[in-house]
Length: 247
Length: 247
Image (cartoon, rainbow over all chains, first blue to last red; front, side, top):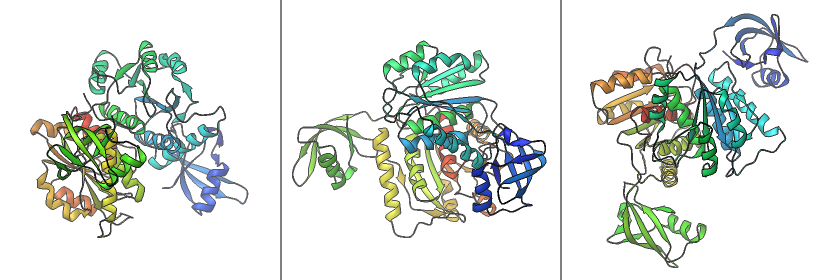
């Protein structure tokens, strides 16, 4: 069944009012009319079967029933990803959403080529990518794309997570699997933050700062992964480890 | 150190002769001259430190020493990937090479939108992507890109592998982790073939044919992964399971 998005504030009692983007998609792209039954998800875990009413000015829907949402991972993973060149950021967000990430924080690193300007346009663009990816992969939660920040800012938020992993290609001793499995034996891991450097990697100073604030530095093995690959490989491995790639 | 590629037959005694592509790259892009010391790998696991001799017509090198190649996975994984639209195939090959795949077989499926024509141009293009990705991620083995084939052809080759996995979104009972861990307890897994459908997935008949020939059908969980994501997630999980993302 076709799926569309409406934020929680667009729902009122048994009705949901679609925004312009989705209304356009419904009318002009999918060419649906009044009476069509679709699914609408609110991006925060709820999903409904809805009968559409397509009017000239607006599209709204009458809620028929709430439907069970596709299972979200119990493990909440936030990916803090060093900014790469334009479309690679979108690739990372799309793929991370499919795999099951909870939130994405663009990281501005010393070696980042692309810098997010204070204007919000790029982050808005990234949020749209997350929303489209959630639609596609049938998640009812849209991962949040947080404001871009630097290592020195993100370390102050480490306490929001119970575990912080730093993927660092200069790490010689610890690998992801061993570290995760040892940590799991000591404590429950429910909120995980994963830091991935930009092309060229974290500088030693950046890695050091993260480690001093409690991040576990891990290697992903001998093959050099591009930045946009590293995050996805790590997420896949983490969700595999925590049995989140299961029915 | 800069890395270039030369096939085994381009090595003669203590010399190596670069092909036109690599010679162009050395002269025109990297602007290296005689005396530059680089690494040259043969795509089959050997790598050398080489002093370049840059002449007007050709570039060749004098081998200084063999160097240890970056560790290749012990587990040999072949990814048979349902053909997707153009650039997605290249993305799959690039990422699969980084993660550590041994070989890639483009699969022509009933729901494949893109069809490989008998001409070899597209496969040649895919081989070039694998070679460039191997250069980038410092692997000394270039994954082979085999000729595109259909499910009915590939099932006749299942006996070349000790285990065949079919990623199938309609699988309701078995997931990747449980299946892999159960299989590992029964036998050594060294040669693994992973089948991934195209956009739209395998048809029930295709899946049935693979299963009848011995493939294990597995799910990657409740979130719907795009075809180009599914292969990479599965490879990441498999290499994680087999401790191949370790130093």
